[in-house]
Image (cartoon, rainbow, N blue to C red):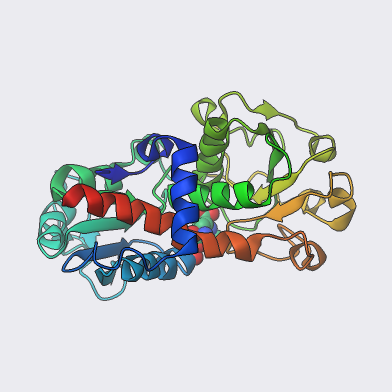
Length: 318
Ligand code: AN0
Ligand code: CP
């Protein structure tokens, strides 16, 4: 594997999940694979799970790990070519990328959508520059439009807990006070469509995701109707995608919060969320603390999804 930014990069999902299960049974079976190899993780945004789980996965494979928080201690980076750098940005990404690449073998990048300009975000300008100019394998730790390590961990979790071959999985929008990217729902939709589950998306009008991510999913605007017979409820907030409201918060309607009354409409569904989650905005205390909540299981599987990706990248380096 040379890069990991979207579902296509992982190939056959059954093979990938089987490999994940094998790693989960013995995560220390490949400690020689990463010997004398260095992972550099670059964060343009905050993280708890991605930072720790990816570092742990790399250590399980015997790698050395360096972490750079671009906004804490590094020079402020200019990302646009052609600008006169007379502001507060002391270094250009076009120098920083090859410099950083010279110290490592593999690069992970977290760079969220800025939600200012749809074209800029959907062209994935930051991670694409790392792919173009680093000369190293690059993987996404959540980029502007996708969060594939999360979706892969979610797929592993679904496969572990599903009770039928083709469960009904519902991605539901839920309220949040701040504008969030579409990366997690886009990516989840992309992976669910590839996994060929019965997949439904529910959200208020105006929150339609990009058609290339919705794919063959059924869109149901009535949240309660969408929940009927669901085996899994996957909650997430996102900001508007459609013009002219790109990146805006159109609603904070708490009627969309996931509560026990709505969960009672489902087929005793499991509750999922990628975390971090705002309690009693996205989901009530009762639901997230219920035995049906898989949020910690998903986070645990982040170590596994990262290890599959790093293992495949390392195997390709040899
Ligand atoms: C981020 C998002 O919604 O993309 C990261 C989720 C993994 N969430 C927040 O910024 C709260
Ligand atoms: N789910 C997830 O990616 O969490 P972090 O933002 O804490 O890494």
